[in-house]
Image (cartoon, rainbow, N blue to C red):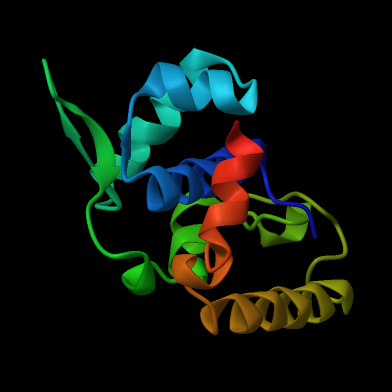
Amino acid sequence: MQLTSFTDYSLRVLIFLAVQKRSSISVIAKTYGISRNHIVKVVHNLSKIGYVKTVQGRGGGISLAMSAEKINLKNLVVQTENFYIVECFQPQGKCKITNVCKLQNILYEAKNSFLDTLEKYSLQDIVNNENEIKQAFK
């Protein structure tokens, strides 16, 4: 299974903020070598769904809206990812064998196993080596 860049970038922004506490879009984009426009979209969405808070003006920036322990990886991925793994997962899918094909059930089971694993972890589990992560950002 492969996550979209949007989910990947969402995770990276949250990791960065968990370690650095507060930052700006420009700093995050430069640190990861990701387009500022992509980070703007990611931060906007993370703010909308309640994971980050943004403060405008001097002394402002982006920070986590809750503790890293409260950010469950499954919840984040479900909110940022498109799980239409194959066409038959889409509401308007046009595959001719959807009604008789066993692939949909197998992939559904695999997706649920993936999400069940993510449910066991929080953002805090990713950043337990905070000092090493800070060093890697330099």
